[in-house]
Image 1 (cartoon, rainbow, N blue to C red):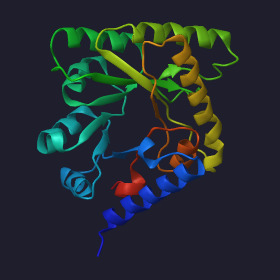
Image 2: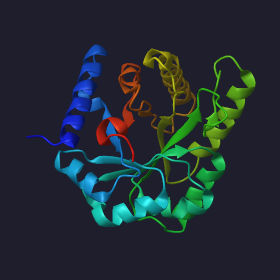
Image 3: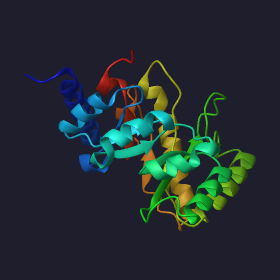
Length: 242
C-alpha cells in the first residue's frame, strides 16, 4: 500500500506528464523541485526513497540543518529571498539559487567565490524577476517590460552587471505568478517570462538561459505548457503545512 506522500508525488508526476504531452514536450525537460521548507528531514528522506531528488528551501538556518543530515543524497535549491549577510552560507550549501534579485547580491556572490568560499562546483543562479509588478514580491522589476522603455532599460542594465561576473553562472529566470482564482489567469505571466528569457538570451549570449523556474502547486501545469523547465511544488506533494 502506497503512503500518502507516495500517492501525492505520483499524482504530481502524472500531472507533469499530462502537461508535457499537451505541450509536445518530453517529461525529462521538466525538473520537479519539491518545496520542503517547514517539513522535517524524515519527510524529505521518504520522498528521496520514492525517487524525488530536487528540494527547495527558503531559509538558510532551516536548510543548514537538513542538508547536514541528508547532504549529497539530494540536489538543493535556494528559492527564497537571500539577505546579503547570508550569501556566504548560500554559496556553501546550495546547488542552485533561484532568487538572484539584484546586481549587488550577484557582486557579493562573486566576491565570496573569489575568496574560495565554495569548492570547484559551478555556482548556478537564476535571476528572479517581478513579472507581475506586485509590491509584495521580490525580484528585479520586469512588469510591462515589453512596452515600458524605462523598465526595460533598468532591467537590461541590471542583467548586464550580473552576467559579467566571474563564476556566477546565470542559467535563466525565475518568477512567482500572482495568486489567482483560475490557473489560466497566470498564463500571461508565464508567457511574458518566457518571452523575456528569449529577449535576454539574444542580447546576453554569454549566459546559457536554459532555465525557466515558474509554476507552483496551483498553476504548474499552465507553467509547463508555457515552457517551465523547473516547477516548485510544495503543498501538492507534502500536504498542507501545520
